[in-house]
Length: 80
Image (cartoon, rainbow, N blue to C red; front, side, top):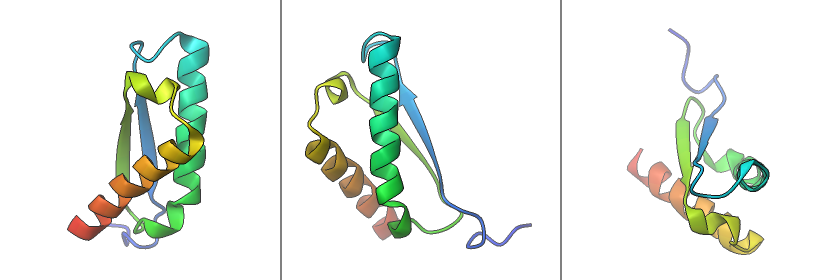
């Protein structure tokens, strides 16, 4: 079995059709990926994190999106 700290953290993003059409969903996915990439050092290696985008995420400001992702990651890290 691999050492969990040696494997990088992985993020998965669920963006349903309720968020918008394909262009909007891909934009939301790109924004979520960018926000998660900035917070990657906070996440322990070997972690698998799934983020589900709600319909309001299509209109969310960048700072709001970053803050929500950071809050979620902080909650996960505290529990781990």
